[in-house]
Image 1 (tube, rainbow, N blue to C red):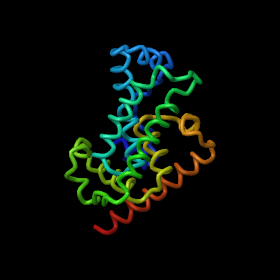
Image 2 (cartoon, helix red, strand yellow):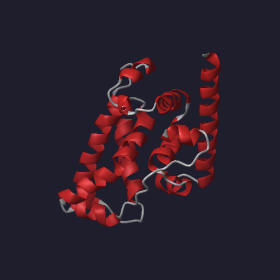
Image 3 (tube, rainbow, N blue to C red):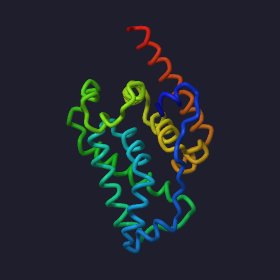
Image 4 (spheres, rainbow, N blue to C red):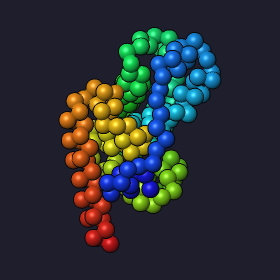
Amino acid sequence: MLLFAIINNQPPIIDKFQIDENLIHRIGHDDPIAFSEFYRLTQKTIFSYILSLVLNPNDAEDIMQDTYLKIRSAAHLYEPQGKPMAWVFTIARNLSFMHIRSHKNIADKGFEDFENDSVLSKIMDQEDKIILENLLRNLEETERSVILLHAVSGFKHREIAKNLGMPLATVLSKYHRGLGKLRKSINLQKGGR
């Protein structure tokens, strides 16, 4: 019901998290408890962001794991700048684009296969599945990223702008334009039944 709430202008009920730079520092010093805590706090966010880039849940899971490996191996190099999630998103984005470039000639998984996908089968709410399929099919990359970061992770628009290095006006525009496209697509589906 999370995505359904967002598309219908209802505030999502989300456990808001804040990543402390100290957590990254502790990971850099091989603290397994810090890494576990970081994973627990960020897994939905990172998966959603990567999924918005690669459009394939299985690839997104693989890239997410690579992202965590990279975070673990590079945490000692992290320079505190007050934006640890921006650093994480940069890693995830770079790995996603590397994956896309290396798999250019491989056909994308069809959207009709999503319903049977093991990753998306974890989404129990049918309305959220429909919205997610429409989100992946009909929105451009930035719109998907902004909506998923807001809906799944509860990032405020200012936080999304800061973490993705975008102007706030662009984030707001992409968010509202993307929601409009989703509503239109959902309404067309409902009318076509």
